[in-house]
Amino acid sequence: MATDWEKRSGATFEADKTNLIHFTCSDPKVDRLPAVVKGQAVHPKDHVKILGVILDYRLKYRQHIAYAASKGLEAAMELKRLNGLSAGTARQLFTATVVPAVDCASNVWMQACKDKLLGPINRVQTAGAQAIVGTFLRVAANVAEAEANIISVQERRWRRAIKLWIDIHTLPDTNPLRRVTSRIQNFYPSRRWPFHQVACRLKDIPVGEIENITPFALAPWVKRVQTISDATQTSTSAGCSVILAVNSSARNGMVEVGGVSQLPISARGKSKRPDPSVLPSKTY
Image (cartoon, rainbow, N blue to C red; front, side):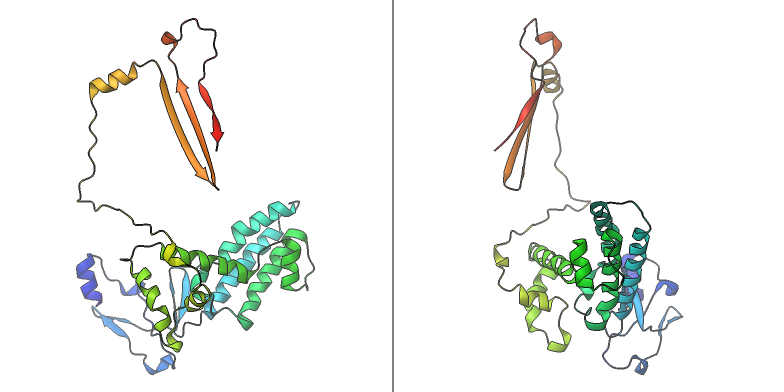
C-alpha cells in the first residue's frame, strides 16, 4: 500500500517518518511483527501522534489528556507570573493562551475525559482562577471557576462540539463527513463514533433546515471568468464630475449603509455649500 501511494502521489516514502499502530481492544503484544516497506522495517507502537493528537491502541486518549493538561498548566503558571494585571485582562489572557492549549482537538477525545482523567484538567482551571482573582490553593474547581468568572471545561467543550456538529450539517451532501452522520446511530455500541453522544443529545435540533454552504472551487485547469475593460470607458469614468461609492453590511439584525462621494476641484466652482466628501452612515 505504501509503494502504491508513493506511485500515485509522487512522494518519497521514508521509514524514519512513518509510524505503525494496531487499534485493538485486546493486548497489542499479540501482533508485534513489523511491516517491511522497501527493505526497511517499521515496528508497531503503542501510541502515535497525528496532527497534534496522541492516539493509543485502545483510543482511550490517556496520554493525550495528560499532555494537554501539562501544556495548559504550563501556560497557566506563566500567566501567574504576570503581576499587576486586572481581572478582565487576566481573563482574556487565560482565554487566549491557556484554553487553546487544553482544548486542542477536544472534539476527538472529549468523550474519554471523565472521572480520574478530569483531575489534571481541573487543576489547570484552578491555576487559571488563581492567576485571575487570586483564589486559595485548595479551593474546588467549581468554586474557582465561579469566582474567576470563567467557563467550565464541560461547558466549553460542549460549545465546541455543538458548533462542529452544526458546521458538519452545512457541508454539501457529497462530503463524506456529512454522509456518515446519517449512519451514526447504526454503529455497534462498542464501536460508536466519538460524536454519538453529541448526536443523541442534539437530535431535536432541526438540522435539515440549516443552509448548506456549497463551495464552488475551480480546478487549476478550468478557465476563470475573463475580465474585459474598454480604454474609452475608463477614460470617460476618470473624467466624470462626481464619483460615488456605497457599501453596506448586516450584523446582529442591523443593516448599516455608508457612502463616499468625490467631487473634482474643477467641477466645484465657487459654491458656498459644503462638500459632502463623506456621507454619514445610516443604520436600519
